[in-house]
Image 1 (cartoon, rainbow, N blue to C red):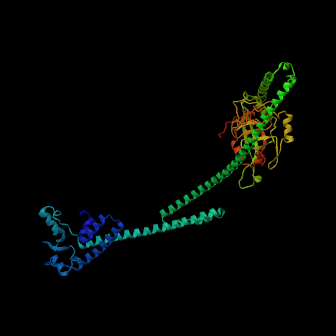
Image 2: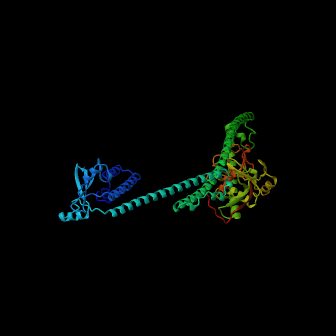
Image 3: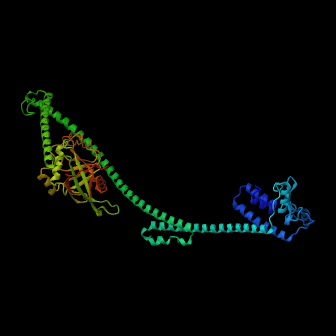
Length: 557
């Protein structure tokens, strides 16, 4: 807009070429970095030239601006005459001057009054002196002061910008140097953590008095962030080390599982071969029985009345089946009687169910940086909740009696296979060697008549799920085990076909509800897989007690 102050100054004090250059730069949308230096230089140059020309050149009263320009061979104040010309002509009054612009209005000439007096007369004549183009011309002294002030302001802003640019550059360099020192310190700490102490770290800190306030705050903020990151790094390093330890333990378990799988595959092949041999032997016995029955005429095969009536093998088989049914009925009566006695004995001795047993064990805590023989020993507690009395009365009462007589104190967990963790009256001698059924330990079970269970009690509603308890052997006892996986098939009815009565199952009489973390820690204790997973280090049962007045909730897996 021509009414703005910068434009008026340009119209009054600068040639048209400067004005055109200014608008050209504005149209090209250049940055201030190009505009400001150009205008500053042009403003200073033309202001100096203007002031010098006004003081040295006095226009004659009879000389027009055009004549003066022609006589001097140049335009106004030394501008070339070949350029669009700006002339100064006298008005009707001595204090009135007109600026004449030539070559910018379709080849015509337009005059602008410059003095206050002329402007006043123009206003009196037309009522609107500004509409006639009359602009008051400031005096030379006021004009010089304004231009000097503008020049000083530009120089001040330029110097301030230069000063702060240098300060920012210096702060940036110092920040980069600090970062390089911190990187070197971190590399040194990674190579030798003990060599980096607080004094060394402190020496890398940038003194705040060398920087400005904002830069110092940024440095302090960066230092706080660095300390926070260092703390988080230490925490993450500890977690990584823990994860690596767990990974090593899992790798060991996987190796053990692979060995166990290979062992089970070999056992499976062996059992199949043995089963086939038993089938062949059974067929052989059957053929022998048929030959003997034929030769004796059916006599003296089964002593007693009724055998003489059997004239064929089928009749004899019917007789044997009837006798077997009678025997099983007697066994069922005995089992029922034993279970009733067990319920009565358990309630009278230990009170009403549920029953809980707390067992304290001692074992070596895994430390990957030391040899297993040097691992520090620690203690853990296992809490068992026994099965409902109405489902497994004999096995529950059997185990409660063992705990009540402190028979398990001093015994040990000896086998940590892939599927079970087994304990018994055994004593660890050295790595991988045990005294099985140690005399002093086993005698306690024998004297209490609690070494074997009366029969293989089992209930289909209480199978060998993960973390349940089972009695090992036929008949079961005194060893018991904790199922580390679901062994419902292997240890259920028909799962132990290497026994004479293969349809029987191991008694399942309780479950682990507390101490599952202890079981995981025991998995890191080394074992001898060639001997079925025997512990190479001692895992001792310190004591086992019945928790009469305590209630426990089962912890999550």
